[in-house]
Image (cartoon, rainbow, N blue to C red; front, side, top):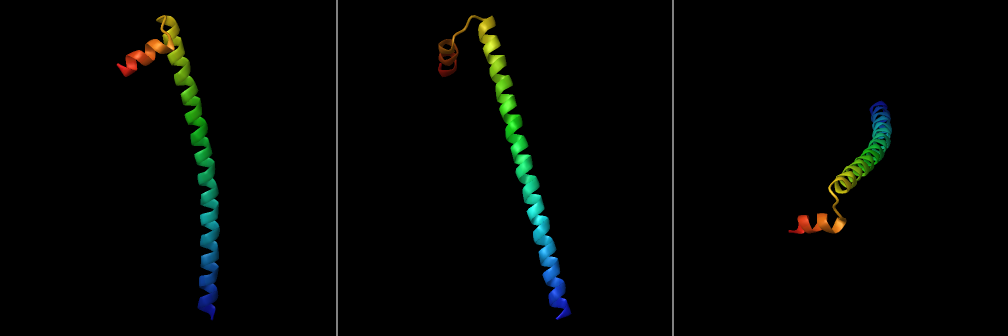
Length: 67
């Protein structure tokens, strides 16, 4: 019976470690989404500035992209 208790303890320990890592992963995914959103905002800002500097409208840009 001593071995069974030892395995049960190991199982519990591993389950706790998995739960902790899953929480860490959730946090990292949230950080990733935040960084992606900030990048998208920066990219949009650069695009708008370029359009303003070159007197382009959204229709002009879309027409160039669509061909």
